[in-house]
Amino acid sequence: MVDYIHKVLQTQDRFTITLSGGNTPKKLYLLLATNEFKNRIDWQKLHVFWGDERYVPFTDDRNNAKMAFDTLLDHVNVPKSQIHIMRTDIDAEASAKEYESILKNYFPDAASYKPQATSNEQPPDSRLTTHDSLPSTFDLTLLGLGDNAHTLSLFPGEEVIHEKNDWVRSVFIKEINMQRITLTAPVVNLSRNIAFLVSGQDKADAVSHVLLNDYTPDLYPAQVIKPVNGELYWFLDEAAAMRVKK
Image 1 (cartoon, rainbow, N blue to C red):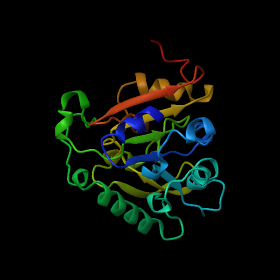
Image 2 (cartoon, rainbow, N blue to C red; image 1 turned 135 degrees about the horizontal axis):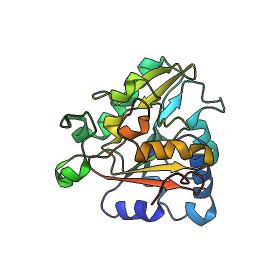
Image 3 (cartoon, rainbow, N blue to C red; image 1 turned 90 degrees about the vertical axis):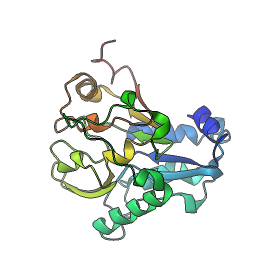
Image 4 (cartoon, helix red, strand yellow; image 1 turned 120 degrees about the vertical axis):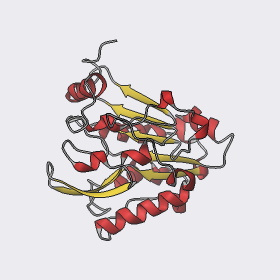
């Protein structure tokens, strides 16, 4: 990750990253905040976003942004004007619209991009596209995976899984009885690099379902994450990977 950030900043003056909540990303943020790593990144050039947020106050320990500040952002010198939290101090719908506006100002070329539909409704296959002809959004998007195969706030059976136009949605997740704000597949799939960070035996079934089962995103929502102009990586510990055969 350090090397990739350095490489990108050789050719452009900013690096855009989307952070994730959860215990596995938390370990990454704590590591990046150590002296071994934090002095190897030009934090002044980072622009920080979030993949989703629980609609709870910033002071609530469940808030994804709070976790990232506590573990990383309070310990490095990213300019505050370049850190874009999903607001929970205004109406959730208004927050989603505000966040989408911020993203479209950052990525105007991607905002006008319309992916080609496919017959089976699967996301476009990046192997069938000319990368140089497509716009991109984030330089790096970090994602987690729930034990029910959800990622972002795309939970099984929720219609937001199939969102084709809006980049940000306010959603009420019945499964957990909570309002959330989330990025959707269209904006995430235009990332240059997407990395799932997954650990623990309790995620092993979800990993195998997403990677090995037929495309059924209503059951396994993380399957909708398939970059059209970039690369997709899975970083798994042995426990999470135990059901995935080589």
